[in-house]
Length: 218
Image (cartoon, rainbow, N blue to C red):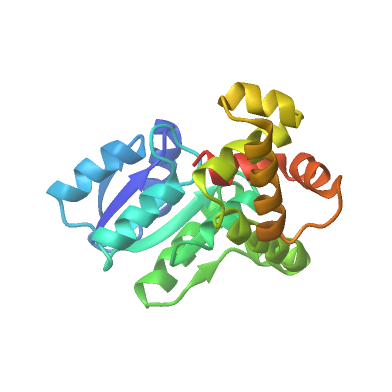
C-alpha cells in the first residue's frame, strides 16, 4: 500500500512513517508542501494521503480538494496541530476519511489508518470532543462562511476594508470608486449577510475579521 505523507517538517514525516510501520507492505512517498505532493500524485499510484493542514505553497485543505477532484479513490487523512473553528470549518468542505491531532498522532494514527482502509471514517477522540463541545459555534461559522461566499468580488473588497476599520469615504478613495458605489455595496452586503441596523455591518466585520480574511483571501 502506497502512502503519501505531506508535512513541511521532515522529523514529523519520519514520525508518521514510524507510527505506520506495522501496516503490511507499506511504502511511503514524502512531500514538504502541497505543490510537491501534486507532482508525486501525477507520477505514482497512491492509496492513502496523510496531510498536514498548515503548510506553505498549497495548504492541506486545498490539496485535499484537488485530490478529491482528480484522484477520488485516494483516502484522505488530516493531521493538524490546531483545534480551532477555522480548521474544522474548512475541513468540512472536503470528504476526508480521517482526522487526527498531531499531539496524539503516535497513539492514534495507526488506528485511524486501519479504520480508513476498512472504509470507515475515523475522528480522533480529541476531535470528537471538540466537535461535540463546539457544534453550535462551528455551525454558526459554517453559516457565515456560506453567506460570505455569496458576495461578489467588489463586495468582498469592501467588506475586507470595513473589517480593517475603514470608513466609507476611505474605502471609496482606496478603491477609486464613488461614495455612492461603496454605499450600494454596503447595502448589498447587509442584505446577503442578513444584517440590519446602521452599525451592525461594522460590528459583524470586526468580530469576524479572521474568518472574513480566511474565506475571501483564500
